[in-house]
Image (cartoon, rainbow, N blue to C red; front, side, top):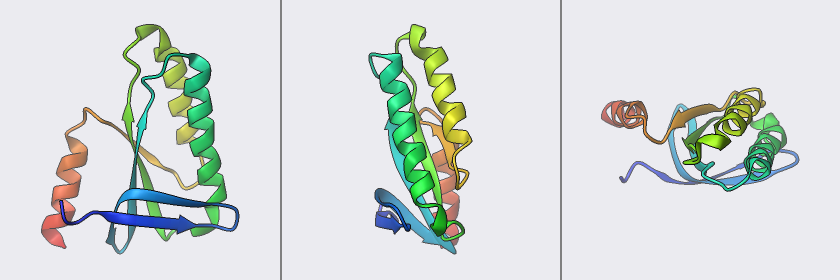
Length: 117
């Protein structure tokens, strides 16, 4: 777990602290995002907040890659809102990558980079 550190990315209009980051050429910054919320509006607001951060950090493009470790809603009725939120995030500047918190591929990717560091 020693490969991760806090990293604040600063753009012209925003600064965001990522609790999990490592440098491999550029910064790879991870942000857990739980969408296990109680309302569709809450899901959309959270997505909009993070899309706003990506807009605010646009000038830092090329210096870092944002990743969202995403938790889906447990209420099946909120899945359509979750899907809309994920489409919104995918359309954000900086091309953030989203990975399901259930996915093992993220751990594999981290370990592969750590092994080559």
